[in-house]
Length: 229
Image 1 (spheres, rainbow, N blue to C red):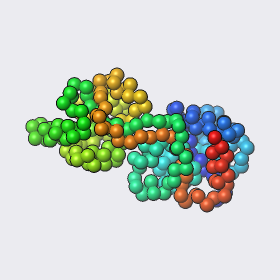
Image 2: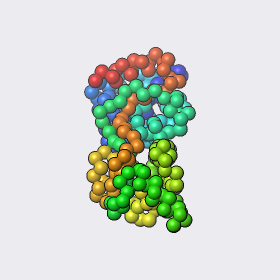
Image 3: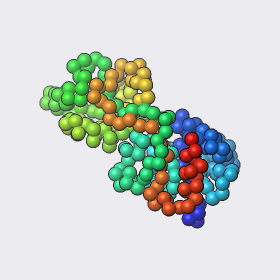
Image 4: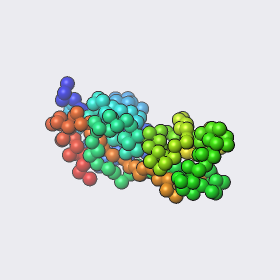
């Protein structure tokens, strides 16, 4: 069974389309028995390859535990994962698509808050006067926490975002947010402003490999085929 290669592709969204395009450009035909909604597939021209269509976050987890040999996901999701998972994955190639930036944003009316240092003052005010911590809504708790600690902000509470993060400050669920953005337009439309030094991480789509699979001979072949352009 060691000959079987497992490749993970995002199951939905723009990232899925862009990744499928890489296979198409390199004349590799992806086939699924039950059509587009099928979560399992193969490559018409190559044997012993299983394609799994998974959530982009799950691709990182499965590359980490070795149940995927090769996978496509976002650099942000790799860096958000636990260090022990990151240490088991190699980034082979970064692409020019899927570009986005994880940023810290505050409500527009907060005119006195322009930088992360200003945020620290607000956080202490919250603690002293309101007897509660400044809440930060995000889908990226690890990256957000590390960034804020690095910048000297310690008086905050992370709120796990389950939906549209930009709505959290206006539903009373958080005061500020850390969110991924491509153009910043959605943040602006929701009366949010990125702090001047609030860039946490730049991201793009990546081809990644599980370190436990590097020696597989047929893996080198598929990487070469997918890296032609």
